[in-house]
Length: 353
Ligand SMILES: *[C@@H]1O[C@H](CO)[C@@H](O)[C@H](O)[C@H]1NC(C)=O
Image 1 (spheres, rainbow, N blue to C red):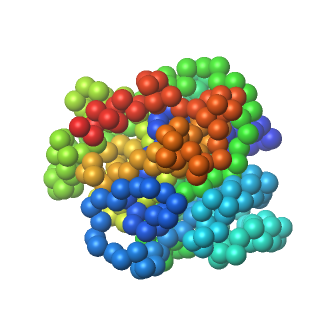
Image 2 (image 1 turned 60 degrees about the vertical axis):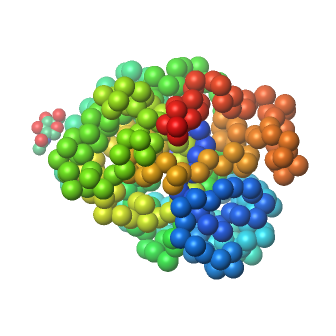
């Protein structure tokens, strides 16, 4: 996804070394064609309709990319299930964008524009200081250091998309992204530079926990939460592990809950979305790891997915005939090797124990 000024093409979540994971289990939304284990769900019969949608933040200039994504989603999933698409943009969608995308699916398509509250500077942000922070981060060669729109995007995905009126009628969402070709080698230490974007995020969340015992008391205890996925030293610091939010299927209720909104508003007040470059992936991951019980997560090992250089292509024989990706051919980019510490898979397994 391209959110930089000018025509430099840059993938949205280049920095994510986390694993593809899905927050909360989601009833019948995905049951056919995917073998998954649902846990902790209120009993629903498979015939009950689920109020779910695809949601995508996309620009008019990304029409080709999103068209490619929609074709694949329709072919592999939605042609059978007919879930609606919600397209969101910080600008008005062009007639061409609307015509092209709506022609690619027989499902309903909806188009919305973000207002200033969702995509703009809140009053408490000192924009002069924010510009100075961007300059400092640029000197350190941190990816997207100089981008304002990237920061608006991360803040929007952390705190607002689920409050957009077009999503009001839905309980679940599957976030999708325009197709992005990987445009250059990863020639820096992705993991380290990722941490440089969120130096105070963890401490800020810990401060929130201390200052809001009423909220923190509702969080599961260490044994039952996934906290060990995001910290290696018993909470002293953040280890950088996070879930890819650009492939995320989750309950909107999680983000709409008072507890999460209180946390988001606390983070927003601290200014880190603009003075640092807090991403929605670490924000969602830390919040979910602290707020949810382990059994409320589901890792979709069976969904093949590619975003920029990171590919997840299942190798297990039982999934192979459902996937068009080829684990061998995918070496061109590269398939995630779950033994690679960069994947955070070991942390995930440790946290699940
Ligand atoms: C905003 O930041 C600039 C630069 O750091 C500083 O000089 C100025 O005093 C700040 N303004 C306010 C109102 O805090």
